[in-house]
Image (cartoon, rainbow, N blue to C red; front, side, top):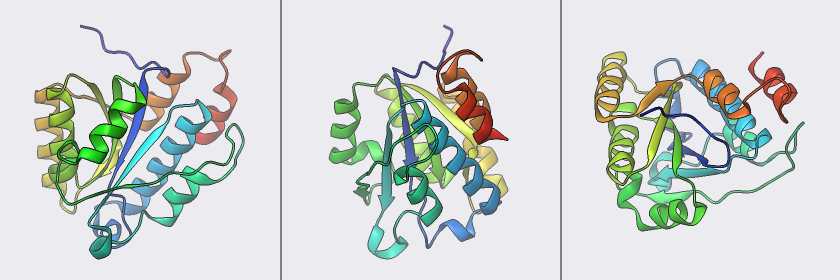
Length: 191
């Protein structure tokens, strides 16, 4: 079965990009940059986002750069707001508020980005697949503290049926072509 991204079927899920844990992630600077670009590109193309926060009291709020990308007005997207889904479960699919928001979106294809790859991201991806969603993981927008954990999570999620690709590939596939709306914004975002 061919799996293709279509912007009217896609939802971006951002898992636990939080202030107190993000600095411990391997390659956190590159991870933050790629995640911000993914958010801006999805916003420019009209793809909605769902954000989770794991035990906010202990791990803090969503990192400022991602918060800004989710809310600020920029070329191709009006200012917006979001309310993160608070969770204490590792899989977001074990949190009723997340499942309700997911169903309310009406979207069947989920683009996943977040931390940590081998815990909350992996468990959420497996549960999304089990629930019948098509899942794309933005490989450059997920990380763990250890490279080995990230590698093993990638192998496991791919074996379970997730499509691994990159932020740039996702954005251009969602866009669809050089004459499509959003192409200029996407080109500027990925430069």
